[in-house]
Length: 86
Image (cartoon, rainbow, N blue to C red):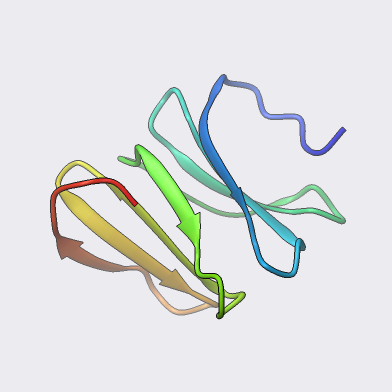
């Protein structure tokens, strides 16, 4: 069992180190799980797709609601108005 998520999953991606799993569920929420502890490290709303950066293990982006959001490490999320999917 990778993680036990309570809702159907729309999109998911594994970080390049394979230590973190990011997913978007059918309630349009993005979650980041620690693969060892299975705990939720981060969550946010209004997402339809998610992708990890292939070079920087701590950088994640997700899109939804006309916005591209970038999360890096423990820094706050940066939101950029932009249509499309990651």
